[in-house]
Length: 527
Image (cartoon, rainbow, N blue to C red; front, side, top):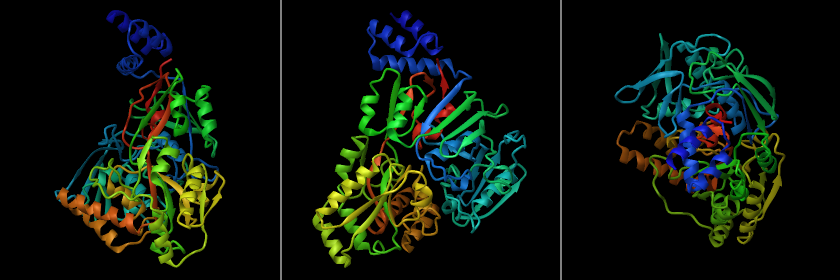
């Protein structure tokens, strides 16, 4: 039997027989489906990437008002486009560590206050220009200026000085930060010629593809950049990204074979979709969270008792049960969960209409509260808003819901309107998550949270080398956000992706869903 199975797996890995045929013949040999899938996946990986063809992916989040400037990327769709043509200095590895991209290596001073990144030689941008340390410095300058709108501004504020010396890019920090290399993985920080100062939206970078066609909010096409330096990326000749915000349409595209992979499989139907013989559904827990965000500086949310009333007025377990269908876990009004390296468990906040009513009465506010939502903010967001409305009703809180158009949600509603639904995919370390969205000066501080003690703790934690003390500082920061912030976080969502079975090289990786949004770039077609 072993010889027959070996013969079959090799033929399947080479695309000579289909996955379905392999599974059927393996079953005849007495091998269960789960074991057969594992054997086939190992054989495909051992056979190595196959080159050529076109990989199509369906992704949610994009809109016609999106920007092509990496500094202004706000959603999964634009980030996946960035992955086609650009690369940061370093990137998360599959196991959550770091791997060099434009930086060949990096090292820090003993107190982690000075970091040196050695720039990889002979890497070229897609316009043929060789990458230099000066290009890296210009990129960081563009994301650091006081007038920048970059989503990376919050993590760049800790930099005191930068310089390029030969092949080295050197960063001096205002305060030591052992996590700085992790911060450089931020997807906004794509290295561009002259930092993108000449044309930030030109989509010229060092990625494995050149974007040759685009219809903003609809479709992007990337063709292989023949001189890309890394043979482990860019196996297909062409990548097609279709921006499909409607959950049903995105799933239909996968089931019909229009695309090879999709992001955000709706939890409600994930089990049903996984029964298809030509589709695998991959789910992994992580730092992603579906949220309701209130501006702490705007009435009535500038009253902490109003915020606390809403936090006690939401039924978290009901959200997990009816929105995530088990693909996730209960949140606790902090962006940090057990997926972070220095996480500390805290007392779980639960639904309590009496406490919600107490805080609302104490606030002195008894008017309606307007919540804006759309399907583009997270799958099932309008349904989640309706559940929130019902649970608040038991506390006497009048929550009104306004459904906004999907198109333009990220440019017209998120980070502009005082109360709306949203999502965060999380970040690799606490410092990056807090610096991006909760530092009072962060451009992406979407709850308008300003707390002097929190800011001081965040800066101090970067320089704290005692891990026990640092862990306690992060726990204290989480408590401050939980009890005083504008984040209402009822649930952490699993990343649920759908992938056609003729895609090879898929693996569970750290970071965002769809292989940290590198799925189209790192996989290949097997048949």
